[in-house]
Length: 364
Ligand code: F6R
Image (cartoon, rainbow, N blue to C red):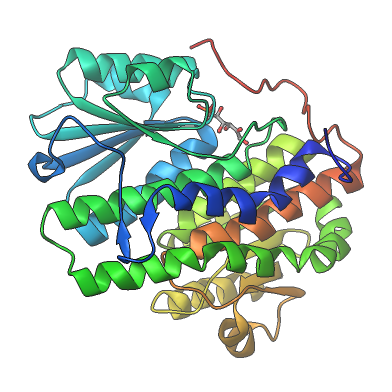
């Protein structure tokens, strides 16, 4: 049931504050200001490295997880799309934690990668939304997301719930490895608790995003830029736009733009820049300015500080709440999803059932 929403995708975008809160609830102990995982049959302290495997949107959660696990737990992390993982004959050393991320728990390539890891005696964990799925049954440690059924083919609420669990896992690993103080953990928990409210604030910009959707809908190509954990979000923005609006879109790490894609820029190319203020901001803004000088129509998604310092020449700005860098990818996912949604509606495509796509990809 879509309730009073026009599409399941829209309903699922709007459910995010609730389902992220629901998911975080089972991973946070607010009184102790600690993160907690379900009981497990192995010791996280013995983990020396991490391999994350997933497809599509879930693989971007893996890429963001790499930043977090390396930053907090100081463990090396590799991330693969599942369809490549087995075929490169990966080196799976003892002490590896293999993590699969999947909404359906049935994606054929991810399931095959999980079985490959198990065969190599790797300890596995799964961030999975469907608790009765094949992957959920086969992982050593099930880390459920509580997004509820996701009907729209384009993944939205599963993504932000997966990020919530990934953050909890990164913090838990960091604590188990003795690399996170109780005070730092408490601070992170406080920021995670604020995530649902920040998602609500992001949703409040829906009408502004809808208003600019017609401009983006007229474009042939759209580029998304981000740096650090916002780089995978640029990939997610581009994927969301192309799958439901059929507009060609690419996501790039901000610093990579001048190594090729800048050749595409002219005044018909919208450039969506995801740049929360913080240590990475100035560098991303200088990449944005290079594109603006060549005519790019910049849409700057940032917070009040970022918009005040760099929003001047943008054709549009979308103001996100000021948030801790850890929750920025969750919050910035909202405008990216809403933009794809409104562009698709403006173009009249079938938002919930885009052509050529299936909700669960059970062929390799
Ligand atoms: C994009 C999308 C797909 C899925 C991918 C993995 O909006 O929905 O890219 O993320 O097919 O699916 P799961 O998470 O079920 O393994």
